[in-house]
Image (cartoon, rainbow, N blue to C red):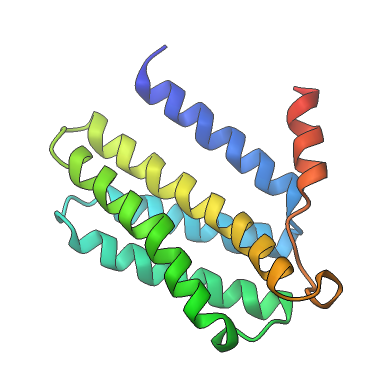
Amino acid sequence: MSLESSSLKLANAMTGMAEVGLSNKVSSVVKTRSIIGAVIMVIPLWGIECILYAVVLWGMYAELCRLAKVPFWSNFFTSVLGGFIVNVIVVFILNLILDFIPVAGWIGAAVVGYCATLFSGCAYLEVLASLHKRGKVKERFNTSKAISSINKK
């Protein structure tokens, strides 16, 4: 199995997990931002795309806070720190390496951008639920539902 087909299968599996574990509104936000993140990461700008990716990522965090009825600015430090450590550094390093591999590297960078954003959206909702009392967070990722859908396959 080629790297490209394996990457696309991973992205497809993660999309299915998000569709099952998130509400329709949240799933739409996360998937849209993931597609935008993937497109940004395909553009070989040797680092500048990571700044654009960070803007998309933190915009998604702000939208998720709005949907979860949690104030974004009270979680700003956590959002920036978590987004920087988990995504920007990992995505920046992987993207920098993949930028130098024509076509296959660009496909890999798109998959990295897509999957990282998708995973971040799901994980961020769980971070919000753990920072605030779970009952106060209106939207969250349903891990048990997502895991059971994976086990059925």
